[in-house]
Image 1 (tube, rainbow, N blue to C red):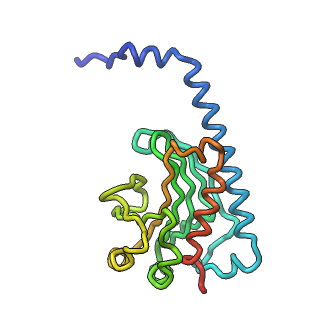
Image 2: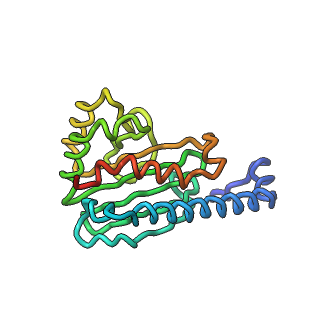
Image 3: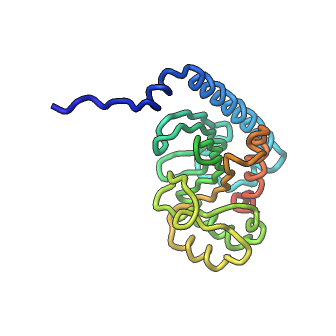
Length: 211
């Protein structure tokens, strides 16, 4: 019979460190507060006259739909995120996610799939230089739910990569474009996640807008 796993000295000390868990709870509350502020900012953004009506959206899109999610197991690390706007309906997806992935980075991502994706891809190509050069990256992963970045995972959308980006998009049935912000970025420490998210959303509007 195999014995139960034992704790190392370091692990045992951590289990007994009440301050560690209090700190984690405080940080989690601050992240949620930043996501609440992000939601308020994006709501204001979408409420601007004419913007919402100009978006290319799938059938049944509800501009009020959103969700806050908190978990512990995104590749063994805690995470918190806001989806707004949020549309997941069968094959159709039109969602902007602001994700805080502990131990990794913050990410602001436009997630698109379904009957409108052909139009979104065409907008990327036709309006490429409106989108390029803004710290955005195209996900190369075979799934929408991969959140790592770098070589093999994402392709930076820079002004010199139009042909390459167009070629990659042509072969994909969905699209995810992400801006990654390192946890060491002083803007995160300063509580500027809401501004970063709203700025990223604006940079992606040429993809989402009908004209």
